[in-house]
Image (cartoon, rainbow, N blue to C red; front, side, top):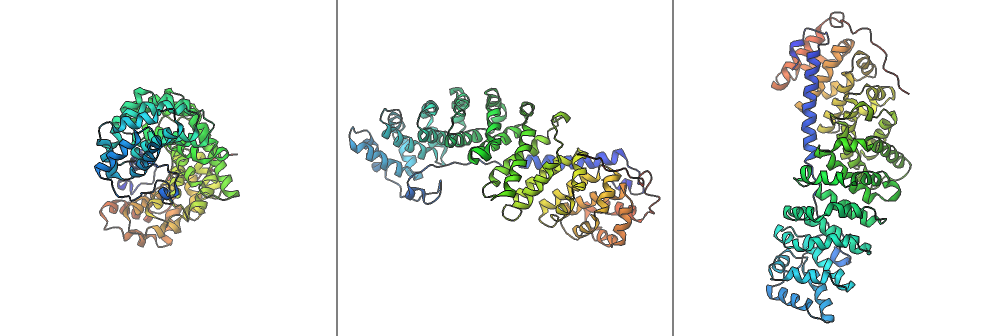
Amino acid sequence: MWGWRRCRARASGRGLEELRARRREREAALRKARRQEQLVSKRLLREDPVAEGGQDGAEIVLDPLTEEEVSELLRGVQRSSEDRRRSLSRLRWALQNKETQQKFVRLDGSIRVLIGLFTSSLANMQMEAARCLHELSHSSDPAVAEACLPVTSYLLTYLSGHSVEFTELCLYTLGNLVVESEAVRKQLLPQGIIPALASCIQSPHEAVLEGLGYVLSQLLQAKEAPTEIVPLVLDSGLPQHMLRLVCSGLKSGTGAAVEFAWCLHYIVCSHTVNAALLSLGTIPALASLLLSLASEISQSTSEGLELLVCPVLRCLSNLLAEETVVCEVQIQDERLLVALFIILQCFFQEHPFIVQECLWLLNNLTADEPFFCSAVLTLDLLPALLQLLPCSQTVSVLVLTVLCNIAEKGPAYCQELHRQAVIPPLLGTLMLTDSEVVGQCLELLHLLFLHWPEAAVDFVSQGGHRALEQHQSTPELQERVRALLDMASQPVGASAAGTTQAAALPAFS
C-alpha cells in the first residue's frame, strides 16, 4: 500500500520499491502459472485414411476383441507364412482399442513376440510390428506403457536407421512412452536417449527433426527434468542445434522449429542452465527471428505462423525475466517493438492468446529498461496499446502494467503519457468492476500524479473524483482510492516539488 504517502508528492524510494515489489510478486505468480501450462500430449501416426478418421491421432471406436481372439492373433503372427503378415496387420487395427491393448500386454510373451518381429530382417514385418508398438505407446494406461519397457533400447538403436518413415515412427513411439511413464524415462536415460537424439539432430529430413523435437519436448516437461534431464541435454550440445533449427524455421519448415522452440521454452522454465543458453546468444537470435516473423506476416499469409510465434515470444519473455540477464545480453532495438505490434495486430482477431504473449514480452522489455519505454512513446505505439484496454481482464492488467513500467521511469515519461491523452481511457477503466484491473489502474494513476501533478488536475477536471469514489467501499481498493483523492485535491504547486521541470525523453537511434 502507499496510502501513507497521500499528503506527500515527493518521490519516496520506499514507496517506489513497494510498487516494484508488488509488481514482481504478480509477475512471479504469472511466470509460475505459465511454467505450469504444459503441453504434454501423445501423437499417433496412421497412414490409413479410414484409421485416421480424417485427423491425426483421432480416437477410433473399435469393438474390443475377446481374450481368445487376441490369443489367436498372437498365434497367427508367430506362424511362418503369409498369414503372419495378415495377422500382424489385423493386430495393429485391433490395438487401436484400449481394452484390446490391455488384454494383449497381459498375454505371456506378447511383447517379446512383437520385439522379435520388430528386430527381424524382413522390412515389411519390421514396419508392421513398429506400427503395433506405436499403437500400444498411444495408450492412456500406464501399465501398457510399462509393458513396452523391453523395447526401448531397440527403439533407440533404430534411430540411426536409413528409412525416414521408420525412424519417424520410432521417435513418436518413444515420445508417447515417455509421456505416460516415469519408469520408461528412468530406463531411457541410462540407455542413452539424449546422446541418441543428439546424433539424430544432424538428420537432413524435416520429418525426423520434427519427431525428435516431439520426444525432447515431452522429456523436458517431466517433473524430474530440471535435475535429471536438462543437464544432460545441455552437455550433449543439443541447445545450439535447437536454436539453429528454431531460427531457420521460416526457410526449412516450421514443424521442427515449433517443436524446438517449445523445447527451449521448457529449458528456460527449468531455471537450471539459463546462463548457458544466454551464452549461445539466444536472446538476440530470438529477437532477430521475431523481426523476420513480423516481416513474413506483413508480406504474406500468417496461417500457421502463430504456432511458432507463441513459443518464441514465451521463451524470449521468460529469458528477459531472469535475474541473471545482464546489460551485455539485453537488446536495444526499437524494431523489436514495431515487430511486436505487427504480430499483435495480425493475430488479434483469430488468435487472441498471442496478444497476451506479446504484452508479456512488452512488459518484460519495459520493466527495467528506459530505452523501450521511450520507444513506446516516441514511435507512437501508445494509441495501439490503449486500444487493448477493454479486451479482457488479463489483457487489461498487462496493458496497465506496461504503462506502470513507463510511468515509473519518472516525470518526463509521465508528462508524455499525459500529453498523449492517457487519462480518458483510464477513466473508462475505472468504470469496471474487476478489482485487479481497477487496482492496477490506481497504481498507474498514483505514479502519474506523483511524477506529473498536472495529470491529477486533468483527471479531476474530467470527473475523476466520481470515478474514484465508486470504489471507496471495495476493501482491497479503499486505502489507495483515499490516497489518490487526497493527492488529486492538493494544489499543483504543493504536489509538484521537484517534478515540474521534466527532462527530455532519452533519445535512441
